[in-house]
Amino acid sequence: MCGIVGYTGMRPAVPFLMNGLRRLEYRGYDSAGVALQAGEGLLLEKQAGKVQGLADALTERASVDLDGSVCGIAHTRWATHGPPTQNNAHPHLSKERIALVHNGIIENHNSLRERLRADGYEFLSETDTEVLAHLVESHYEGDLLVALTAALKEVQGTFGVACISAEEPGVLIVARRGSPIVIGLGEDETIVASDASAIIKHTRQVIYLDDNDVARIVAGDVEIRTLDSTPVSRATSEIDWSADAAEKGGYEHYMLKEIFEQPETIRNTIRGRLDSDRGTAILSGLNLEARDLADIQRMLVVGCGTSMNAGMVGEYAVEDFAGFPAEVEQAAEFRYRNPIVGSKDLVIAISQSGETADTLAAVREAKDKGATVVGLVNVVGSTIARETGRGVYLHAGPEISVASTKAFTSQVSVLLMIALKFARSRRMSRERGMEFVREIEALPLLVEKVLEQNDRIAKVAEQFADFENAFYIGRGYMYPVALEGALKLKEISYIHAEGYHAAELKHGPIALLQDNVPVVALLNHGPGKDKTLGNVAECQARSAPILGIITEGDEEARSCVDSYIEVPYAPLHAAVIPATVALQLFSYHVARLRGCAIDQPRNLAKSVTVE
Ligand code: M6R
Image 1: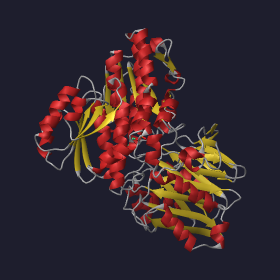
Image 2 (image 1 turned 90 degrees about the vertical axis):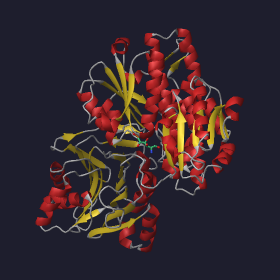
Image 3 (image 1 turned 90 degrees about the horizontal axis):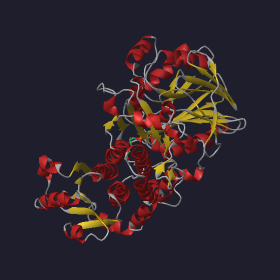
Image 4 (image 1 turned 180 degrees about the horizontal axis):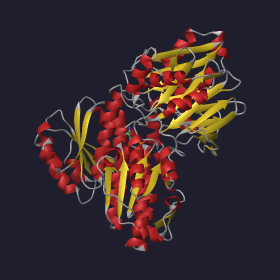
């Protein structure tokens, strides 16, 4: 949520900052800005709207100072405090000598603002960030690290911050608590950012700051302290994916590229993690011995949005195959309802970004209560990955589209492997385990078969692109698929779509059905199919057009619906993946026909780092 970039070195800063902003735009696109050390002072340019608007403004004002600056900060914003206007855009300046960009929320901004106003500071924006800029200035006596440290000690809330002063040429100060800051180490230069995709083009050597770290960076030198001024060293890591992975690679949208990557990303997720001879999964990152597995009495999955929907598949699979209680819970609710969690519980935190504030809060709550907490995270080195300290990386590569696709299928793949591992440690036979391994290994092929139907799915989408409301229904394993399908459609096409258990529709929502409210029915072959067909008939009796997601060759299902998309046969726990991919493509084509900003839907941001 929001993107930060900073550069200090020997070369002009603007190309680094602008390239970084473009890479981070998926984190927020309400406004963009840069501040540079230029001549004796600071040069500021900011614009409401996308990064391109800022690029145009910089081109217009081209100057020697701008081109010659070798130190600066930049930001792309997802609005929290104050609408997406130019004044509310970052960077924020204080007394023309401090410039600051910030991700997160300063919770005590009202009381600090009152105090600073009384001290004579003038506010130009409605943001909490401008409060922080003035607070830093109020502590400034020539050493920006000291001033930022003092200011952050007065702050409640979360922050990833980068700031510069007009009086300290080449000095860039960054700090974090709750919002990530990655420091990319070059030769005689350093580029900092809120995520590695802004850095990868320049260097793979990075340092991830810990919470409450503050760093002073000058060209290639990095000095890190904690907020209580203790010097610390943080390990250097190497980014293990390439810059190409974060490019569109010839596709019209990142979302489409990421949908098409799924056979490969699932292969990457399961590679080396299945033991076909013993019929089990090898998930050493969980760090759970046989004794630990036997001790676990319940699995609790926490996550948000798509990650939570994947979690529900995990809940079903663990209960189904391992035979012990599992539950999925909205991470946002977990922390505030005083959940009963203890040392016999395994809590699985699922997050593509590894930075979602609600999920992170749930992780901390579960740890405080003594549970064993593991992370299922895609972004290596992210906060949830580090705070859980154990878990399974998804290895899906960078997911840039705001709508999550390949992360979901990798999350489900890992959850199926967890279910297998637990099942084999309890009640599943070796033979069934071997078969289960084959079912997981077949997933990439199943996805390929769905992708082959892309053109046909695009045609089907034409029949549904003009509706303004839709319902998705499913049972059993297809219920989370219905939730995920509806989420995908609403976030990128702005069609109001609701996922419901197929049986639940008649308890209220059916009142809304008419000939302009379609129902997407998950009719995959399996125990719930006949009952769902009954529900489909109830919808048709109310004139709702029906799109069926059906198993390939299922004549009966085909004859009961108005339109259909076929997915290859698989046992239901595995069929989740091809069915979801079909719905991803369906949403994509509907959104495209409606002319929507698919990769950057309105009001959304890729990683949600505020509660
Ligand atoms: O990074 P996370 O997986 O923790 O993100 C959770 C949700 O914000 C995310 O899945 C969101 O719902 C997506 N935009 C859905 O496509």
